[in-house]
Length: 146
Image (tube, rainbow, N blue to C red; front, side, top):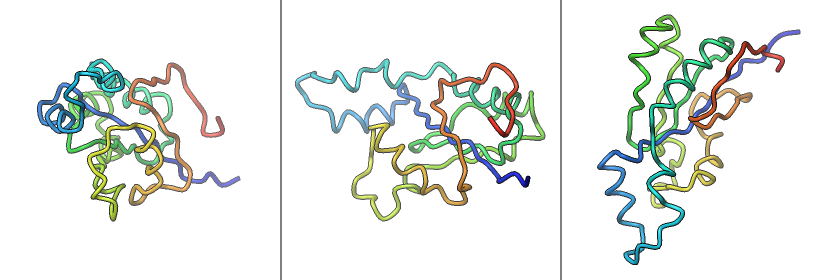
């Protein structure tokens, strides 16, 4: 049986980034009622690094690893270069503007569900893909058939 190409898609944000925080502050109520936008919800403790490395180690059959973000660059390249230099070319950063093309007037978007609904619009994404949150890690070898 011929295997269909399969990609991985990861959504990521660094909530501590001053530019991101300023962008978000424009849309938060001034009353302080921000339960859905608590800083811990957007916190990044470099889990994206372990997510990507776990995919490379335990699921090397993925064709591409797309990381979807909002005008940010995740800190994965140094670790990948050190651990899996031959797989560095698999990583493609996709900005929200690329998946929300022709809907730019609705940007920025901070709601992860809204972002997930547009993942299929990633240019070049294979028909078959697996979506990962940045805090999901593979902990043992997987097979394409899984």
